[in-house]
Length: 96
Image (cartoon, rainbow, N blue to C red; front, top):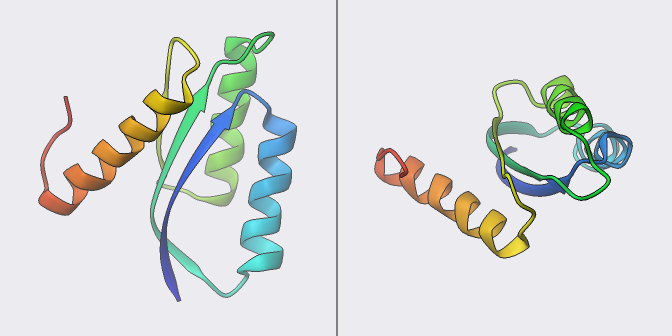
């Protein structure tokens, strides 16, 4: 089974690690992941260090993921940006 996924996250590497471990090792251990897009929002008291730790966690489970980070937390913006990435990939366009 080949899956493409999107994920919104905050700067919580511990929670993200638990989520991705469960997804890739427990829930869908036989799946292969094609496209994977992650948005990491800074949520106080999140620091840049924690956001960078989230990037390490994502790459630990899903190499080649496209990861975007926002300057300000916004779930609406996160969803919008992820949708733009998916749409751009389907039409082979660059997002702006």
